[in-house]
Length: 244
Image (cartoon, rainbow, N blue to C red; front, side, top):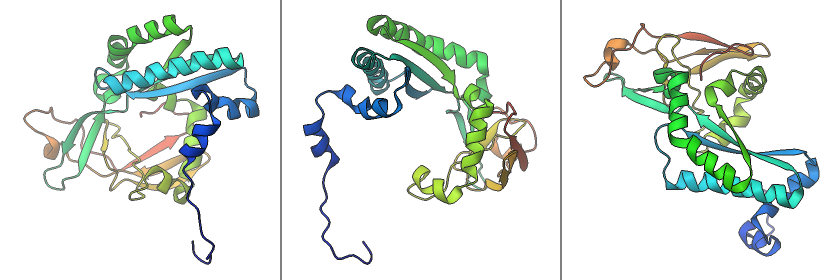
């Protein structure tokens, strides 16, 4: 490091933890000892874009098993909270002139009822089985419902006011946070947020400028025409229901 000549020993945390931890449930012990909660939620987020693959199923199963072990070991109530990410891209389209990518989320393309049907088709049966096998209850919350909560929006707006602090943890390769602003008419947003800019943020809301798209440019043989001429400015408030 700059200004220092002392040798630095690189120690792998895995080597340390392998000798200090006997069971996987011990990973949560420090936090539980410090907070002493009555209830613990293990959050698992999954994009709602089809049937879960093996890796997704393993992670969800591990969450239920860890919650079961936590209940038994620490005598606290535990629940698995399934974050259904209905802001996953349903369709991605390229502007043939600018080559900017625009996406439409599952929420905007299908609506809340159809998203609920996808959750029921691909996930609820498996979660019911895992809950029966482990004795752990679960909750389901879509991203569109979560982000409409005033408390969530308050925290989100607070982070927008600290761009230099959040940009590199969120986007370590290039520092460009993918702040996607959906068009208020068709729900499309820039996928990589190249031209989306935050103009103002404060305690009451934020004002952003999104990259303008033109319906005729994004029209293709396999895609329906977008409605509306595009978008430029949009407001995001704390209490507004909004869209993801």
